[in-house]
Image 1 (tube, rainbow, N blue to C red):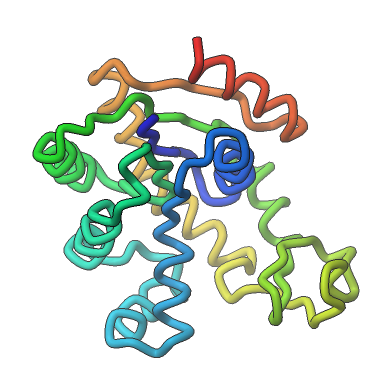
Image 2 (cartoon, helix red, strand yellow):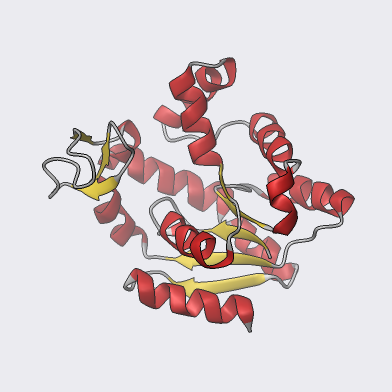
Length: 208
């Protein structure tokens, strides 16, 4: 099962990906996680990406595409994969399709988690992350419920940056919906509901 996850930042893609990973044992390839790890490690890629990420802008195509192609060459992706955060532009989608064609592993579905932008603004500005274990909670969490670590607001979760990210998404990424609809692989799910209800629809759509 080869899947691309689509949806604005904060739409709940990561939550749905985790459920798919647990049930189908697929590797979850999150370019956001990969980039954040590079930033934390202080690699050249991380330094280059950080300035874009902090401003809520897209990291250049050549950086992301190289990262993803390298990851898809690893053995665990032979059973399938879930791509989360890539592609973000039509150019990236075309590049991905070309690479998957070479591997003879075409996409089975482009799964769109669709949520109203104002709902996303409320979600993300309330989001907090644990400095120690990476747990994602909300402003209601004084300390991390998993490890009692310090909870903080990521630089890209303040309201101005969130709205900029949504604007960037709308201009650059939403054309992907039309692209994948044209490829006849688009599956659209209403993401503004309880995550378990959303997942029930996701699973039904992918296994129908």
